[in-house]
Amino acid sequence: MSSGRLPAKLEITGLARRIEADGGFATTLHRGDPDGGALLLVVSSRGRHCACLERILGIGGSYEWRRTGPAESAESGEVAAFLAKRVRFDPDLWAMELDIADPERFIAETTSLG
Image (cartoon, rainbow, N blue to C red; front, side):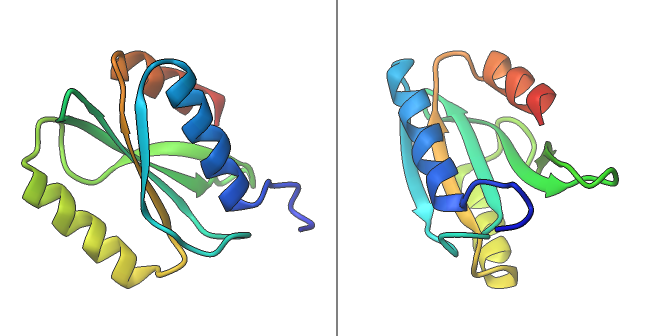
């Protein structure tokens, strides 16, 4: 890979280990291309939807995390419909659900790191 980006499968595995080490739960909802698939995180806390984060290529050529999808506290059906639509649009997409104790901190840290 010439972009200097880690393979998507490796990033997903590392993210799952980070979440589980902090006492959270991570599960892969959809497996995409192991090398170059896009990443989508469905962030929740105690089963309550908090946000969806998607890693995108920014204008400056570097990757960054952005909020996308259903609003906070959306019903599970709305989140599932959003995910199904994204997978139909991009079958190489990796989607992971994270259930964590402090989602606001995780979202702030993740979006600020890029």
